[in-house]
Amino acid sequence: MSFFDVAEAAVAAALDAGARYADARVMHKRYESMEARNGEVEELNSDESAGIGVRALVGSSWGFYAVPDLSDSAARLAGARATAIAKASARVAGPGVDLVPTTVNTATWASECRIDPLAVPLSDKGDLLTHATKTMVEHGADQATGVYQIWDTRKWFVSSEGHRIDQHVRECGAGIQATAIGEGETQVRSYPAARGQYGTRGWELVQGLDLLAHAPRLAEESRELLTAPLCPSGETALILGGEQLFLQIHESVGHAIELDRILGWEAAFAGTSWLDLSQLGSLRYGSELMNITIDPTLPGALGSFGFDDEGTPAAKRYAVKDGIWVGVLAGRDSAALAGLDYGGSVRADGWARLPMVRMTNVGLEPGPHTLEQIIAETDDGVFMEHNRSWSIDDKRLNFQFGCEIAYEVKNGKKGRMLRNPTYTGIGPKFWQSMDMLSSEIEYWGTPNCGKGQPTQVGHTGHPSAPARFRNVRVGVRA
Image (cartoon, rainbow, N blue to C red; front, side):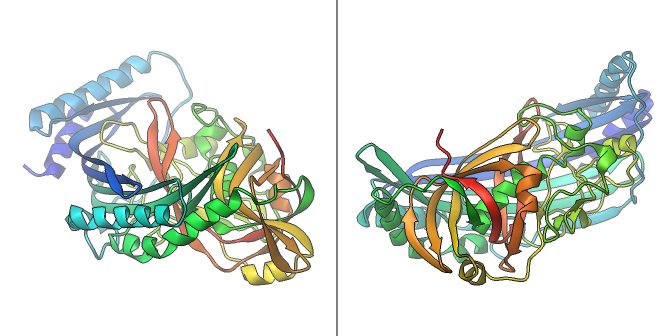
């Protein structure tokens, strides 16, 4: 009996029990991670699980049931119980639930992977992290840490509409961090991002990061920051590096355009949204340089897939076009309720979780400049990079971010290093002030996006490049 047969048995049982629509996902997921500190491996984790999750739609209500048992009998029981839950929920009247049409596919998809990360010997992975962290200590770090994470996920999806899709998604990434402790001051430097860099790729992604080459610089910069001048306070031109700007996109655009938040279906963890659907197509979100895409087709980015967890094929669309808000992240049911004609952004973090609207790859299209040109054309400002902290309200509107490091920019040149830089603003005002954008796009990955109750951890990708914003308040103290 194949995994497709198991899923089809579950869907058939759900329909027999009275569901008007049902789908089932069989998932087999493997995970491995390692952490090292100051030249020693500190922790090694691995996990493996498999099971089936079934959704059933009755009236205006969903039911969901999951079991870690891939036998025919267990799958049929899961289908019947998903329908029973939906029937019980349907006793409470609610708005009608329809599903926007999607193409029915029989397909196979696999993410790009040249070197299977789970096949790389543990000794090689351990040597990489211990050497990198030992090197940082030798160059002045008081604490030096390194981490890698690997996910290997197989999915078999079947629906009562006729979908039959299997996918193999391999994701991995790594990062290192140096901490220097001074008199009443602690400073941190990270590479390549504050929580590492991740993608839907094989171990070649980690090899390409060249962690060892960057270890001495990180340690030396963390010590230099201890005595650097404080970032001054006031309104000025703010240049953000691509790593910081990707989190700005994630928090102030990505979460805000999730349709379940806009509709008020989802408020846990990160709140709802300031956006009003009546303004879709007319609201100015940012300057004309702001073109934000939703694109799960990007090769190697962490939010890439062939089909979402409703069987909708991956496709690119705009969320913001020339500064105007034009699109949302949606599922088939939320899109139908909102009168939209597309879904494609629904995923679950495991077989035991109900799929929900999640970011895929939400990012900026490139601009016409380089970072060097942006700095050269700035008379007075601050250049900040690498996220250290963030805070945003539950409407995804007012925000404050802190960065690990900043540099003074005077008369077109990058000057002194500055410590404890922060900036604050209001989403649309901030994005409307963007007046220069680099062409130097990188696909940054976030492997720890939390949403829902019970919490699900999503993997998202964010194309981003350095950009300049005018009249931003910086140096704000708590």
